[in-house]
Length: 502
Ligand code: FAD
Image 1: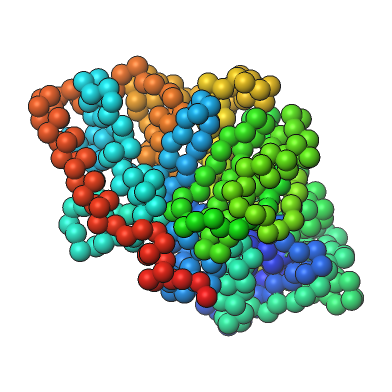
Image 2: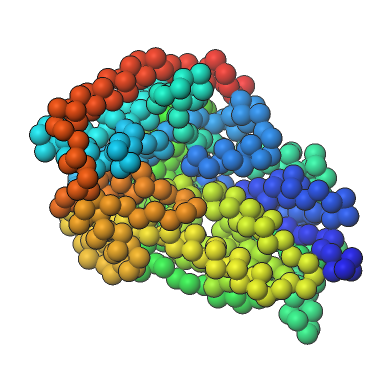
């Protein structure tokens, strides 16, 4: 058995993906016989974007045992309560996709069924009034959950971070090196494969050094040095349903206190992000090259940045989709090498994190059992498809037809899985629930409702509550949410008190 043990793991690439997996493995692989080496090339560099996250990153941070205040300081981070979507459903409209729930379940049903009923008698009612995260985001407030309460929205504040991608990779590198990961600087120029199995045996650097390994983790970014250039794994292209294929990113000076949310503003052929950090603001324009040139994209970005630019524009090209087999032979691809889903819901870092968890669950021996690999790939594909469907929803559920790009999106063919979800909500406000899906019912509701999908009716049992009782409960919930909001400090004062970057 012992000869079958994986002893040498080689991680190719030191971007966010490479250092996240190095950190995860160095924490989780408690075996002194297993060596972890990461090879990266400063000359090639990293994509240098990827600054917004979703709340699941807190699990990773806890797993690594990070001190959160230290992490926030060292990555120049701010806190994130959700994403504001501007001009998606209709020009001039906006909504927030919050990380926390609306209201509370009543009579065993989700809150939004009762709210739909209530709105018939109070047409001015806004569902946002029942979500502390939405209200706090709008008012620029933040605090961590206060566990001293028994039943209060303050007890269940869920949040993520907005941080500097290069500082995050540095932070993960320090963590990994302190736990025994060996870093090797150099450009890989050649890859050797076993002539019989096709497995990768070793990589050769420009200076001639050769590094052999049992398991290779390809974090080499879009090029997919091992998974694609060497193993020719193939790519499933989803760009017909998510047609944006370019981005231009540029940082700007902060012009005020950082907002505790990311903003995604729909433009004529794509959308623009705004991610406020402690020290600066990250901006970028994601667009579709069929409908917009690079010059037009940059011009539009420059016009919308609200502070002086402090970096040159960084142009990026991508194709949305996934490797046909994210794990092929003895190579597991992670991050951009595995696939790409645009950053509309800030999911890429999360997908790296779940891949590390799956890798640990399916950790192989040198036999590389095919059933193990197939299972890993099946679960990875399912996760990507679920995120893909959620992203498509933002483009498809629109009333915009003001440009050829939006006309295309509104009328494009979408996956049956998404059609079924939309039909279920439209018919009676019900939402699909899949175990372990990244985006739960609250997220799907937020986007469907925010983009103007109106259900014909709601759950019939929401009618069982007497009208006066419903009114009283709605009034009380609204009042409790407002009272909680009043107690919260501003986002800036929270940062100043606990985790201001130096
Ligand atoms: P890279 O950063 O490209 O790193 C690749 C590494 O491989 C580098 O270290 C490079 O030196 C090394 N390498 C490559 N070839 C060789 C070689 N021959 N020899 C040696 N080393 C080599 N994600 C989010 O979660 N939130 C966001 O808000 C977000 N925004 C994004 C915006 C855009 C426009 C894009 C394109 C992506 C965004 N992402 C976001 C995704 C996120 O940036 C990536 O998932 C993340 O940075 C991981 O990148 P990576 O490490 O896979 O690749």
